[in-house]
Image (cartoon, rainbow, N blue to C red; front, side, top):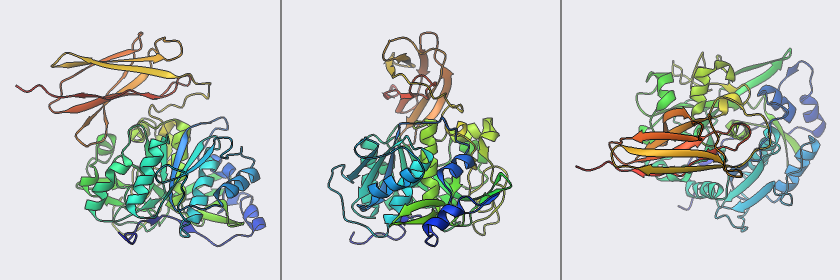
Length: 467
């Protein structure tokens, strides 16, 4: 292709350029706040503990290279008293879409997007590492290649502030670009309200992020659905409604396929985040802002193995999310565009109220020094096949006993789904007997326990015995 396909663009809203002093004043205006939020404001809004930290790598995919990014990032972090994040200290890394140091030219349509994304990650998770991958262009194939590179180079959380309403066939081809095991993909739903969901947010294994309005009034945050937040029904060929989401919605929203969004965060261009670009302060918003916010919260929660656990967590502990019950993003006469109690299209299950709802286990580990974790996964027998899993401390070899794990299975090209939630025994072991009717791939996921790191086992593929 010689030109970018329609709709492959950053999902960003910018409001008027704010003078330095005015932007600073706007973030400190008494009991009612509107616009230009700071890292402290966002920590308050999403109830982030001051001791929550992560050294995870968050991958950010953009089009083109802006040479000003490191300096702008340094200025933002220094201004708000955040730790330095540079190439020199290993916190910041920038590569081309093939992973090399060969960087593309500047894409003027994306320089503000780049600045907003790296600074939003910094605001939410200042201890996280940032991997910025510059795609050669805004073509879907280049952005997808950059996403694959980010996962290959170790990013376990990907922030994707772009979307396309390209044809279904094109999107099916690109599904493989956003499907690396052990990576949480977070994508913007778009800034044009109810309609055709954008890809990659519409893929079933990607967390689709909508936008909200948030204002602090008399010491209380008040949130509603943002009219620009994208929502709708994705085609079933991009992945159907499965597991907890199916149970939550009961098939009442989309006849087939996947409803969008999953979750939401700050998006309104009247209540945006203060960021620095081009020598001035701006207030940036849109689902472009909501996406790196949610990706960074996932990183703080330590969940790069089961991002869809948010549905189970919301059902088990409704207080782990703020239910968005007001606002609309279009005319559809149902929950796909009208916010209300429970799940709705513009805001999904709501916004995070702390980190517990984003974890794979529903609990947040204490910020202790983590020890490395090891696993072994073996099989024996023919039918049924016996799968044995052992979780152990790699340093001492001792068992990690009585901790929750999930046995997960994938059939065909579907995403992994939990088939058993259980606990390791006193020997750190789990035994699972499988009798699949067709070829099935299994793995076991451990979310971490505050002392040991999360771990995902290698996969084992079981084929049914032919008679």
